[in-house]
Length: 263
Image (cartoon, rainbow, N blue to C red):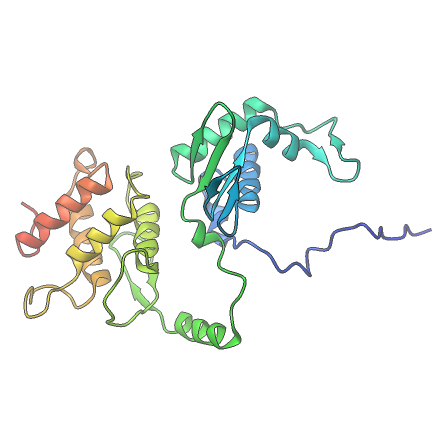
């Protein structure tokens, strides 16, 4: 006799709140670490999708208040019985280790006080976009996605950038996220300060051709990034790689100052 489906069963198909997970998640360096993977997915789902106030404190989008005990209970509670599981427990030590992993690779930042822990997902907008999107906007976005420009860095797989035209770029826009993603995925070593969006914006400025100047440069900052990275990664020994976004910016400034050469 077939068991009748429970009325309390949660359907995932009709949820109107979601997070995006890219297929490249399968290639993520912690994907084979079950505890780190589970903790990160839990953090993505727990993070605020909009700014909220908690005890008079503004908790920004992409962040949330928690504690080690709270995470332990949330990760180990059986949803059917609302009690802690008896097997397959993710221990507090497991959670601490997972958080250290995520901080190490700059997936999250963590601020701890005597009363609570604030966890922030770096690049949260890459995982979740606002839910209220018009059909017109969706159509435009789909068209934009279909008209991507492809740039290749030598020795690295193709990198796709969305074409955004020639409009002046403002701090905080999606180009900064694109640059951040490229550097995280294709620079040989993790860069300190990769979450410093203002410094990333400075890199875009230096890579952008000035009007009636820099005739030797490409027309887009993306093409110039590709040229610089190809030269830098080809001619730089591992021990001389820039270790931070700040140092990389200095290298790019020299590249521009010496008209495409690295002295």
